[in-house]
Image (cartoon, rainbow, N blue to C red; front, side):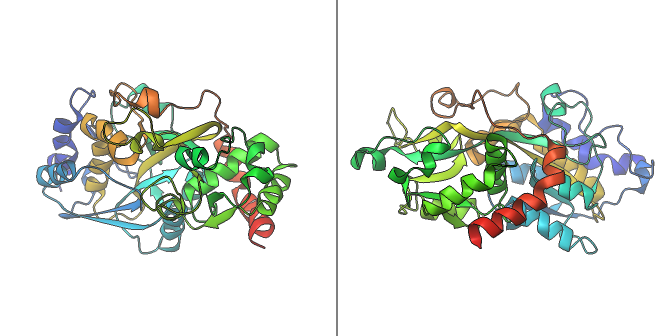
Length: 358
């Protein structure tokens, strides 16, 4: 394959990238150092978590401009996504992945399921969120994983909203809280990391013991927790407290309303970053790189808030007007360094499972 042909798909994405800088993917080389070694069949399989969403118009534009037949595969939440990539390493699920977050990134990188690729002309705000020095993953969006509360439920039951992590373990909030299992859910693991950051290695299991005694409900992933169990969204479940995102309340404002039906508790948040990357062994390596470039285009970055409730990694992109009021980031999110998460993730999950699930 000629160099010109190898770069065709990523170069065409420069149209979508607008004024993002150099043509997306230009000047990149394969792991072997030769652009001509890259493969490019006309099929592309994109593997995502089950909350992935961008507008159909943009998906169609990508397919039309690259000439690919694009298939999207969603094996589950972020944790399930990484698990499946590892289990299928010898026969990859697809060519490119979106939805690995900073709590699972270290596991994916260590397992060797990614092929390093860094798009050309990365915005500084994207480069600052890199997962590792080798460029195995490229940041696409970020947000705060926080407890969300159903305002109307608390008003109707004449109960004050909780504010802190400790409030959630108080008897007033017994049997009101649903969380995601950190073994299968990236928001679940992010919030587990928040409790480790807040309570320390010596105290987080005691905190979860208190939550268990307060009858916390555990489900597999975000979709089940938010859309089925939570009382403040479409599922109209029985739980008025759920682990979700600080941006979620922006999507619970009634038409014509001036206040959201829900609120994020900004003292309970963990800062999460989501990444895209080329899957090792990709059949369509050119297309995989082009899709990573596509996810950083101005149009897709501007589409992310309304589709996936996250902040675009390119912070020069304008946000929806109502986000300042309804979707603020926490001023003091809990954070844990990526190397600490990578070194301790399995232990945290094992000990959490023994403590909470039994």
